[in-house]
Length: 190
Image (tube, rainbow, N blue to C red; front, side, top):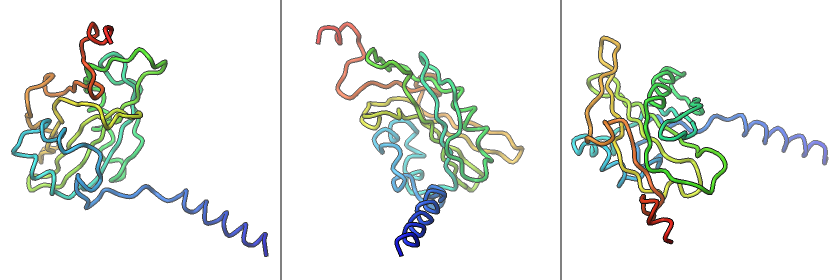
């Protein structure tokens, strides 16, 4: 009896580990909870904020990379929905991302960043929203300022970027640990 029970448990565990992560398809941005509404509200134009909060997501792509100075390096897709159709776009957006203001002298390794790319079906075609977050303890508590990138895939097959707030040339983010000053001289006085 015990060997049969052990085999049954082993099969159940193996099957559950093979399962794909839950899909974002049809869910809204607040439901998948990957960016603070406060951060998103100041990183896209008010025109799009309300509609993005209620619009169903068609697919979700996640790129993981390391921060090297202000650029992302070693970018690789770690989550891909929609059969990889937007993986190249996600990698391109990761290579263009700029993140300033991250100061850390207590870490040996480069900080890990995830770039989330959400795909929406809209009346004009397909829209992509992308934004980075730090994938570390406290990464969701950091203060982020910048411009989430919005792009629309036109009928000619080219992506057209929708201009957002003018920050870091429309492609970058500034970040700091919650409650910390970005001025290194002030940090040394602490």
